[in-house]
Every structure is written in C-alpha cells, then in structure tokens.
Length: 119
Image (cartoon, rainbow, N blue to C red):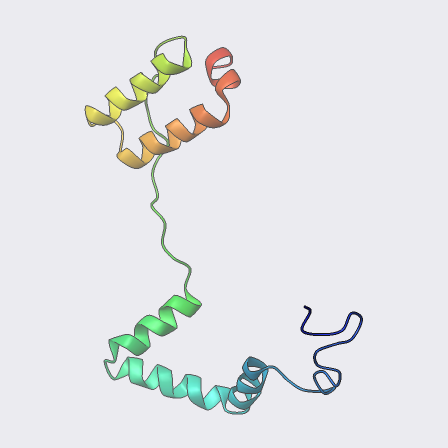
C-alpha cells in the first residue's frame, strides 16, 4: 500500500520561496568579513603558521607539475610493441627519464597508427 495518494505531494507546502541553502547562508556571512579573514590568514602565515601558509598556497598557486625536455630517443622497431620496448629499454638504461618514458608511452597508446607508420 502506498504511503501517499497518487498525485499528492508528501510535502504540500514545500520549501518556502526565498529559503537559502545552508552553504549559501555561510558564504553570505563570510563575504561580509572576507578581507579581514584573508588578512588574518596572511598574517598567520607570515608569523610561521605552516597550516595557514599551506591553505593560502593551495588556493592561490597552481600545483607544480613535472617538467621535462623532449626525450632524445630513437624509437627502434616497426611494430607498436617493438617501439614500446625501445622506450622501456631507454628508460631502464637511464637515457630518458621515467616521466619522459611515460609521455612517450602515452603518445604510442594515443596514436598507434601514426607512431608506427608516420615516425
């Protein structure tokens, strides 16, 4: 047996118009003092609070990503498997970085037709 009658809402009055979500209320409350909050956080970071510094950095600076020069390796072989093996061998021999090997393997996986026929 159904708990409610068909076509009838379980909450006929519903949410009153203009009611804000709790997170919206919190944002409104914070926005009034935002400059003071950020200034206090900056001051704490300057005073040596590493948690405050970490929070500021995580919200304002982009995350660093590994940078590498283009790998200088000749992809030997004709088949995709042979080329992947040459990348692995070059990485294991220290000729290219692990990041460079990962990038090359990604290229081989993304465009196998080009990498076998075009390079």
